[in-house]
Each structure stands twice: as C-alpha cells, then as structure tokens.
Image 1 (cartoon, rainbow, N blue to C red):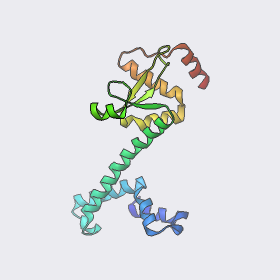
Image 2: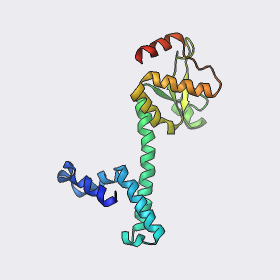
Image 3: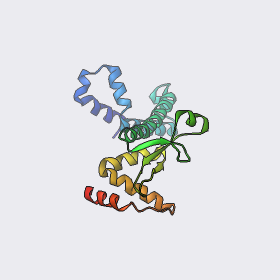
Image 4: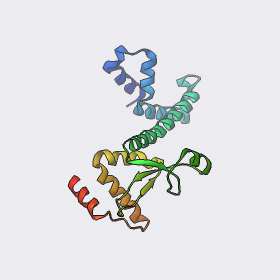
Length: 180
C-alpha cells in the first residue's frame, strides 16, 4: 500500500466531505500508517537519489514526518500514564520510591511512575511497583484487558526477577481468583 492509497482511502471516509483541507491534513498526519509509509517512501527516494520528486522540500518533509512519529510515540506513553494515574492505578513518585511532591521533584530528581500495590504483598503496607515511561502503554493494555489482577501479576513478575518476595497475600489472591 502506498501513501497515495492511504490518502485516497482516508478521502473516501465519510468525514472527508465535511472537512476543510486543513482538518483533513491534520487527520492525515495523525494517521500512523500514513506517516510510517510516507517516511518509508521518502527514505527510499533519498537512498535512490530521487527525493527531488517530492519537491524541493523533500528533505524537510522527511524530517518533519520523522519528528511527528517521535512525538506520537511520546504521546503514546503520556496518554497511557495519564490514564493509569487518573484511574488511581498508579501515582507519581521519586526514583527512590518516596512520594513525589512538586517541590521535592524539582530539586531532587526526575519523578517516576509507580503502580499502587498497597496491602498487596504485605499486610498493612504502603507499597508500589515503579515502572518506566515506556512501560505505560503496555500496563494500560494489561489494565484494560485483565484489570487489577493483571497489574498485580505484572508487579509480581517484576519482583520475582529482582529476587524479592513476590507472592500476593492470601486475601489478594482470593480476590484475584474471583475476578479471573
């Protein structure tokens, strides 16, 4: 499928008739397959020495599309992290695991994201499982498909890899079995 095929398919979309040209272009550059294919075609044209067929701005278009792809990747983890935070499945903390306060975060380092694991692996215990920004989309998918038990399983696997106690307490195991 070429860029032209994707563009034509998007034009056949029912919304196309109601959109201004600017709105269509904005939708087009948010369409991941279009961006990926356009970058692929521009890179091929560049390696073949034919990038001029994309106009005198071909190199600028390639750079712009590559930057758009990078920003979309960043937005992916940001959206996922925001959703996990909004659903109280995660919170923001310090790299050492302490609770994050804006003042402390600015002075002492980069905030980390962590899943809330209070009272999950120990009784009456404030606990969390830190995760990287790049893990956020995967954890959101786990949350959507498996819910809280899936997040507990993920945290348990991380703790097992580190050689830490990783078995949830009995009431948590029972609750997870009920939800399965």
